[in-house]
Amino acid sequence: MTTRRLKLTISYDGRPFCGWQSQAGGDAVQDFLEAAFAKLTGGGRVPLHGSGRTDAGVHALAQTAHVDVPRDRFTPPEWLASLNAHLPQEIRIVRCQWAKPEFHARFAAKGKRYIYRIWNGPVMPPLEIGRAWHVFRPLNMRQLQQAAELLTGTHDFGGFAANRGVPCLDTVRTIRKIDIKGQPGGLITLTFVGDGFLYKMVRLLTGSLVRVAQGKSDQQWLAAFLTPPEPGQPRKKTNFAAPAEGLYLARVLY
Image (cartoon, rainbow, N blue to C red; front, side, top):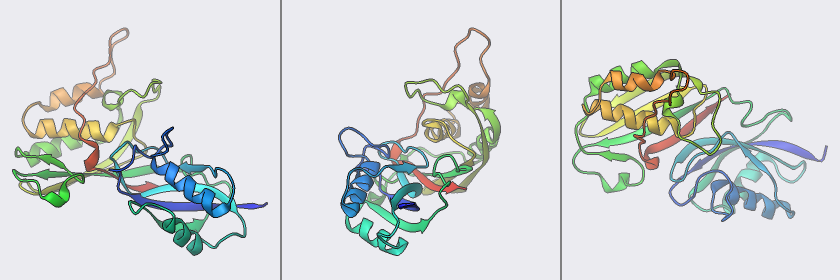
């Protein structure tokens, strides 16, 4: 074999980019990473495979990807240093390691952990701009926790999924936990751990949870989105999506 599989752990500030997945304009996180590999290998495009997509403005603390590189070009520490030297400062490789040939960043994943950050107070600290959602009205933490418990477990989450052009036929997912920390008047974090998430699912869950915690809707309204529709009837779907800038891909579970 002339190549060897490299596993990458990547952190990025999502604000300057149009998301993770490669775009025609070349301004996605994947585009910058593949361009760095092309420079270091001296050849054409080096395909990079991520664990999944993140949308424009969404951040990552530990995105995972794999790539097949020339076997004897660099050691993992040398790849890490060389790649970071060719990447914008908003993208950083935080770990490189050899992986087994059969490892796949997407298909080997057993789950993901996302963090959503909310600044709940009348004044948004300037250093939180672009890194948290400013919700200035007080949130009822008890209602927030009760609503989160309703969403935990195995459900059909089709009511919390946005359309991506092609309908997703399997919308059953398991949320292992939704951990809530913080108090009104400051930073509140919601940590979602599950076996997988649909398109914009975490943002739609968060936006709907906040609506309940503000007293604008109740748990019965929330539960209706978990109920599969009757034959021939349209599915009830929430359209309350939290902004992208508060969302972080915190870890991919293998």
